Image: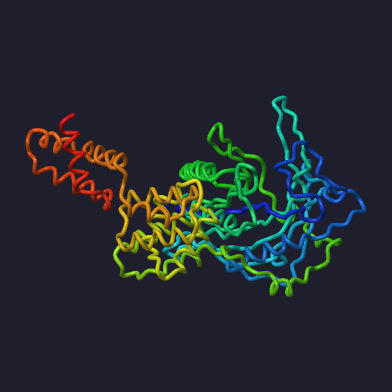
Length: 471
């Protein structure tokens, strides 16, 4: 008998909570995360009372259109909502309003796995709009409590093709998707708060797929996949057949545990939602404007093109851009993009200071002063330690021109002595030789002090050194 194939195929279903002001089909506020009391932000619509009628949230549709564009998906001008029928305590109506197959708001598309190698990508099967369920809370006494503040929150479900073959592929895809939606500002995508939930479908050796439900962190996704892939491989080696079913990840025991057989589409008895007409969103597709940070990959390309690929240090520049994008700080990205839009500013120099210094500071400096400071760095008008100091001080409110005038005056005697003593501490062996009679080393120390502060007076530096030698 031939060797059993161990090819791994992984597809994902991601449920993304949207940052709309109201719920998907009613006017209840979409702020259950900050609600102190359970079951207070509810109404007859999101509780599924008989006779109530849902009304589609326009903003949720706009967000789905924008995301579909970023993912290069084909947008359906006439999406249809369906009822997905199943019984569960957190589902007040006994069905979920969702979208189904070709009737979903978007089909196809892809998301790259890498900024620099765009050939590595994961295909998107579809994007669907739907409503969230209530939140189930397990008590220490074994009871299950239900908070319906979450019921009806707008979701986008993103279903991928099974294009991922390694745990690393999955990690990159999830990090990239989270980066995209956070920079778009359509979702906070906080996995710990349930705003970005992942279902994993994995098959090994061409067998039936196994689903792992509601994994709530990228770290858990990685651990769950590693365990499940190894489990399936071991079963296949024993000659066993992998049957389609659903499992859950037990974070305490670090293993997947069987839950139930995997439902099929027939089990859900899908049919069109009779209370919501077919949407006609063609005019909206023309009206909805993409945000300036909607596509981080296009923005990366735009900023990368500011520097010649032949220039020394280009790869380091690309690394700095990638760090900037993956930080997911919208203000910092806008700031840097606007800084290098000035032709006087060297993007490579600015990126170095942006990544090594500015991103670690409490706030961003004023843009005009940062640009002026970068031009001075390019012209080698300031030593590095002064640039760091000036960045800190202009963030605190200082004016760069005043700092430069202060610098031209040279340091006070007290400031100069601090610099001299710092240089001596950096060169203890040379200082001991100076004290031993090597008077020529005074010039060495004057040079090092001038490097730290070009405005330092050599005569004053010499006098301070001689004073310290005599101490």
